[in-house]
Image (tube, rainbow, N blue to C red):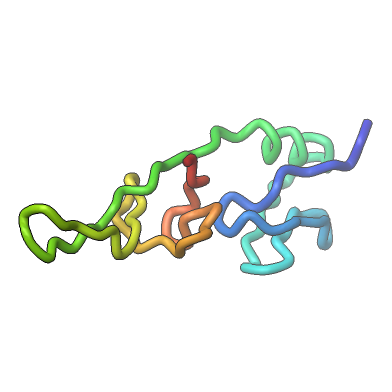
Amino acid sequence: MTDELKPCPLCGSEVGWVSGSIRCSRCGLSYGAPVSKEKVKHRWNTRAERTCSRTPVTWSGDENDSLVISWLCSECGHLLGENANYCSNCGARVVR
C-alpha cells in the first residue's frame, strides 16, 4: 500500500507523517486519531472535498463599462488571490 496522501484541504500544500499524525508542511493543520496509521490515512484520503467558484467583484465606470477588480470565494465570501487554488479562509478548492 502506498503512503501517498492528499494535499492539505486548507492551503493545498504537501502533508507528511509526524508522530503518528498527518501534518501540513505549510499551515500546520494536523489530523490524528487513536487508531492505526492505515485508518488515519484512509480517513484523510477519503474525506469529502469542498469546492468553490470564483465570484467576481466588479467596478462600473459607467453603464457600458465594468471591470473585474477581485474575486470572492462562493462558499464563504472571503477574498481570493488572483491565482488561488484554495480559499485561505474555508479551505475550499477553487474550481475555474
